[in-house]
Structures are given as structure tokens and as C-alpha cells.
Length: 182
Image 1 (tube, rainbow, N blue to C red):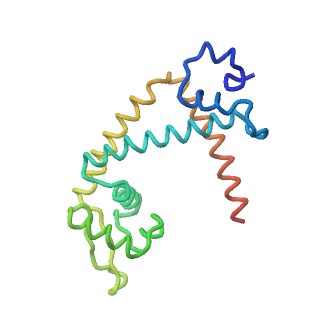
Image 2: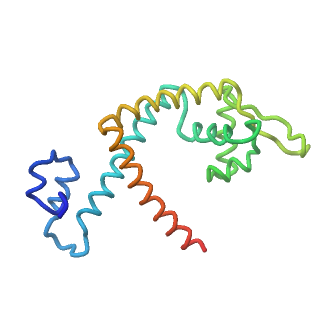
Image 3: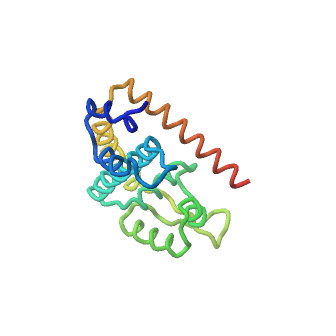
């Protein structure tokens, strides 16, 4: 029996806000609710929210929005660190208008530049500037330090175990998504 469904075991474990929420749900009118599953989902969602807040704080300190950081990530993965606005919009799931606005801001800030496309005289390529690359490196390194502090609540062995378990969940979700898409 797990700690989520075994109140005796929980007395020996420090409780978080999810435990208190699960206690409120125990014995309620949701017969199909598995408290272990609910605990997993609520904790993953809570951790994600908190990590996103830390990330937003880091990016704000470095003058970037999350969307701008993601755009820079996309450019860093491309050969010669260039792409078309259309490719970037598709990758980031943005409308062409939203991409234009984002590129306008980032170009004004010196993070990217628009260049003529040598293969299409009507086209434009977006290139990551040295300043944009430096901004990505600095913000990503800062965030990595913060994430390491968060993860330090676990031993290295526990981190490996958690990674393995989360990978198993992610693979199951990816397989489910693939079967729905086909």
C-alpha cells in the first residue's frame, strides 16, 4: 500500500500541500479517483508551475520573454543559426502576425537580424546575432544553476530514478499521442 492510500505510512513522511488536498478527497464521491495517480499528476503540475515561475524570473532578469528564448533555442538548432520566419512560426505554433511582432522586437533589441534569402529573392532569413546567442547562454546557464539547486533535494541516485520513472510516463504519453494522430 502506498503512502497516498495508507494514512499510517504518511505519519512518518513530511506532508506537502498535495497530501492535504488528497486527504480532502479521501472517501469522497469520486469512486474512480486513484489518490496515487492524483498525487502524481498534482505534484508534476505543481513542480512545472514553480519551475516556470523560476524560468520567467531568470528570463526577465536577462531581458527575454519565454517566447523569445524559445525562438533563440530554435535558431541555435538550425544550420548556420538561420531560418525563415515561416519555419519559426510553424515550430513555435505562432501566427505569421505574431511571429512578425516577435521578430520586430527581437531585431530592435539586437538579438536577431533579418537578411535577404539567397535562394529566394522575395524571401527573408532570420539570423541569430552574437548578442542573441550570448543572451541565450547567460540566461540558460543561470537557469541551470537554479534548477540544480532545486534538484539538490534529491541524491544523484534519486535523480536518476526519478528521470527513469518520468521517462516511462513520457514514453507512454508519446505513444498514446502517436496512436491518436494516426
